[in-house]
Image (cartoon, rainbow, N blue to C red):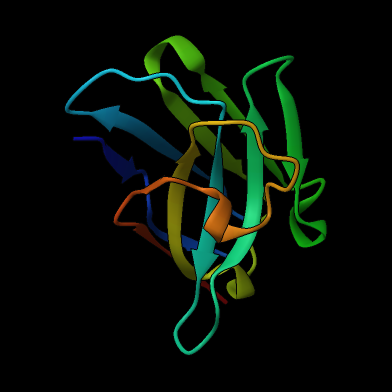
Length: 125
């Protein structure tokens, strides 16, 4: 069984920063990469960022470029999301996910194999 656990969510004011973490638990495994998605009430889940372990390539949604930074530790099966200059519209439940095999499209939820339960991020105006 593979389990992903997110942490670091909370309530912050606009312009503040937050660092999210996601780590695998249960059993060890190797993954091709990991990603972050978010979902606000009444809206579809949307891609935020992803990291490919091989060559350590990163991918970002346009609305977070320049504000968020994704990083991780492949040996620890852990991924981080440093969130800066937060805006009220960033308020959502943030989910991490992992892809076991190669993929050419990191923005599609269906391309990920395991998901965490999410952590709430609330940005006040």
